[in-house]
Length: 639
Image 1 (cartoon, one colour):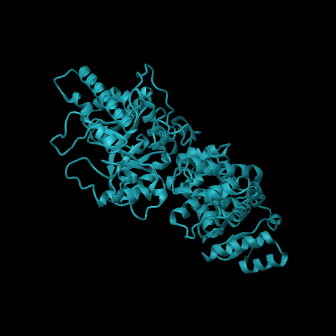
Image 2 (tube, rainbow, N blue to C red):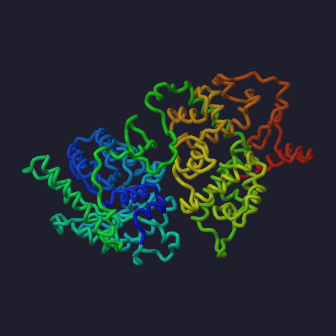
């Protein structure tokens, strides 16, 4: 039976890791549910119980005088007392709706709450909808598999469906359950089709309805003791509400006296919950004196503040892991210096139209394309047991292949990167997988990728990354920017493109093409790709984040090239919308690279010819690179 501390090192969800680590550090498996309706009462109770809890549960929608200062002060208390926040929202709608409820509105829950929960009534779409918003910010989701109220319908087949959905969640956004027992280890709730990996997932069980002095409240709530919950039913955390903050509701007591009673009750429940855990682990309090609650410090516990999402410059929140932090947005002062470029929408429309009409290397040999099922050279392979690749394995292979492609692409043309990935897919025993890379020798890896820039260094990066994924992430590609950038050889551009490939729209991947073109168009005046990313993200509509990289990269590969841009065929320049437009000398056009169009023609110099005729010329001259490009273009046209 693993300890909280041991589980914190192996759990695949970052919020779960942090919660388990906090439980172990504070020797507390107590979560206090502060269900009060006034801002001052909420903050007073949280400050009183903070030293004794690992988690605070809120219902912000019942606070009658809610404002953003509530969240600011609550987050400050989380840093001061070292606890996580769980907004008990109980989402229960279709994916698109819950993603908006989670991210927007007056409460903006995802910005400050480390955990939230949901009913599975709408189906697994509620998980993916919430995950699209929460995963990039290192949040966690609890499914409500069981409830503590009398007559609850959350039982039997419904509980089983929750367990199955959690086990099949490949994103690992689901970190546990609200439940009365360890449902994911109960044979009655485990699908016969569940794989060994799914059965071995580590989920946390948080249990409400815990009391030391009562068995019910007369409104359907049923109470069990901490010992029954933790030791007998093998749950992980006790959730206590009125049993702790109840004295504050007694109008006959002075406020200071009531808050002292609240503090005493929190310490009482913390002690009972931890004693039950020690008993479950077969450890007596004397043998585990080190588990005793330390005296609350006189100075605030210093915790790293979360820098992924900022509502205000000083809005505090906690980081989940000591990772390299990537700046996600400009400060208000920096934002004030940014000016939205004039006519940008017209410029973007021209750019998008040109990209729709042309075929660029990124369209056929880009990093994302290398991992697609239709492009993979290692598709159709059977596993070691002779079985076909499962959907889960195929998705994992796609995400990992994309990551490897991005790592190889630095200072390397797409055509060369695509060939290197193809070599890996055909050479490694099971294609591009974490295990195949770990099992291959350096000589084999180097031989496969020897034509990419800095291939020796990238061989080392790829091998180290495979080890990290296997040892720390269960063989899966991390799903946060900070974790991706912590991998050797992975920078912000790669991380944002990887996140986009996995379905998370959290920012723009800016490479040299995007950086160059954004400055040429006058969209920004920046010196580095990272400055360009932050500037573009400050005003470009978020729905364009996904497409702008591929649009600009392709545009920069065939028209707005670094040297000798084809301003003569660029409609942005023709409409005098580009401040960098240059005059193109006619005698130089013949030397320019050909431009491939989706209508089956090629612009050679200033003459359009059919792709078939151009291919024949390439065959006649034995220009292998040109032949390969034509073949790839033909594939795009067929699709």
